[in-house]
Length: 123
Image (tube, rainbow, N blue to C red):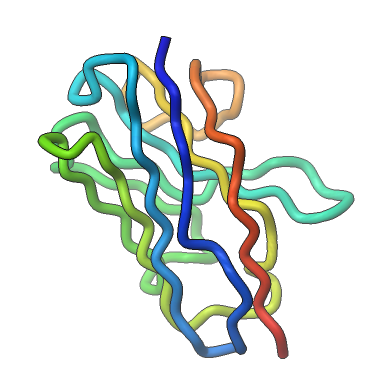
């Protein structure tokens, strides 16, 4: 059983930056591809980014390409999401998730989820 805990959310003005972190415990972190998802009020949870188990490959939804970067340190059981040039439409609860398969974009393909961290971007 893998436990995931996100941190780093907060309130930021448009154009600002935040760095989200997700720490894993209870499993072999390097076995898992990690994904980032977000859910805005009244909307479905959507894919944001994913990073392969060895950190060599990343995938991003179109709306965040060039602004968000995911990285990981397997020795620290940690994955990050660096977000720059934030926009009000990025406001959501952000979740990290773990999967034994690489590069997945669908929520049901992920086996473990964190509790989420709120990101609010003011105009």
